[in-house]
Image (cartoon, rainbow, N blue to C red; front, side):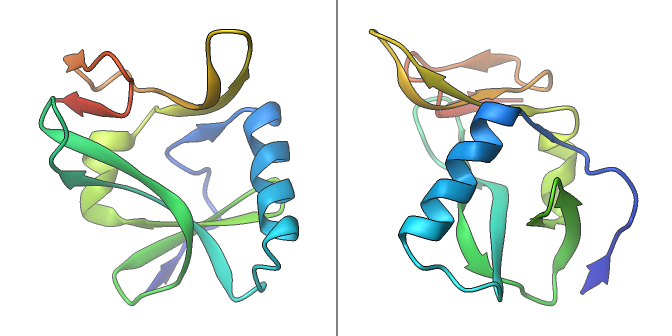
Length: 115
């Protein structure tokens, strides 16, 4: 398990950060947990995003973004570096959005991509 004081390879917008902190508080998630950001095979475009609170594993690099612990496996950084996580709250869209410069294509729902 590596800990990084460097800048995280991803960005989380203030609206997404606010929503994540609200979820953590509402769900009574302990401080042992951090936000897991990653990818997994699957989805209509090849990869799906992983976003949720989890415990740290030995494969994780730990970042801190505005007081929020973020866990990411180093192997996933290749697909996620430069990505921005945003929170949308509008008439047509409500939820987390992934703006990933590494994605060569995305699906209509925005939760999977190919690289």
